[in-house]
Length: 208
Image (tube, rainbow, N blue to C red; front, side, top):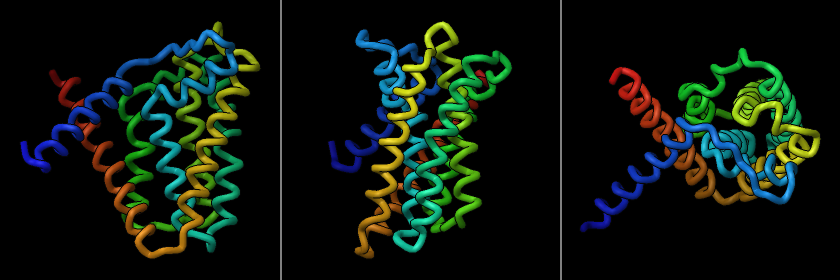
């Protein structure tokens, strides 16, 4: 099997795995406490950490010149996620947040923006971060249900979001080499392409 063929097979297998993560809600229980359950859910749900990764790429893409907007986004993401988590667990009217489109579009759109080289100003970046974090947090709250979510669960989820988003943003914003900007835009294009692929599969599945 050629190298290109192996890469294609691995990409398709990975996309299928992510598609299954979009289609199914996960009740994550680590067995060591609700705080750890809240943190573990982020890494067990591909649409969630992909959305945070895409937001981090967008926040850090401006480099040191955009640190003001990046700081605002880093602060807004965990707070909005926690609020969405509470809203999703308390309301059964937010089922749209668990649809394939709501799961895939956040990281697909943000990835496309990164690939296009868009460097949003602070208000736009903060608003986009809040919208995505609210949506993904509500989907997590809806999946877990009010019987699972307590104060420790929310703290664990918010802490995981804060750590992942902050570290990823810093990793993207810190390097100064020109090739790193190219790598960031390439990764954004991969996220956008993966999102379109998953949306296409979900559309075909619905029509079937």
